Image (cartoon, rainbow, N blue to C red; front, side, top):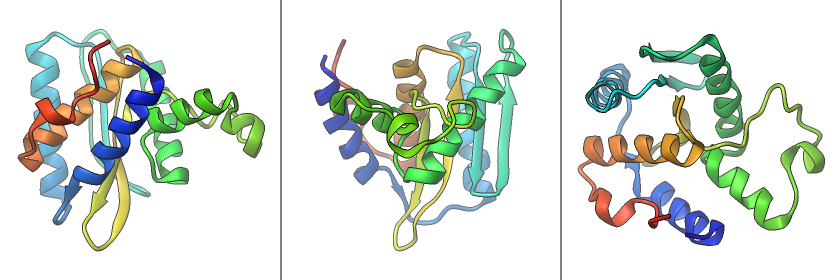
Length: 165
């Protein structure tokens, strides 16, 4: 596994994981799918799904703390600002030996370029929100979101998942 390989695959994920439409029912179904995956695997995560400015789904599973919700907020801010997954933004900075904090003057207290927030993209409309997980190592947060998106969008997760570590 390399950061460059992950970055290329995330770009593919972002192109492929596009909703034909996204409403509150879609958010609910995606949130339930994520919660079910996490409960079956006993994962201590927080799940947040939103259209920008409106929270549509939130769940905190056993083992999480209020800090996980704070990480969610900071990761969501990255997606809202850059319309890319928080992991892609972080990897891009790593590959360029730069950060959004240094290059754009953004506050570390408001932005987290760690994996787990993924753009909610609607065909014909673009990025309208984010789906975010916090509580696992960043690559695992990202992959759990991608797995759930693949299930909901009926995409082949085996071909879209990140390369093995």
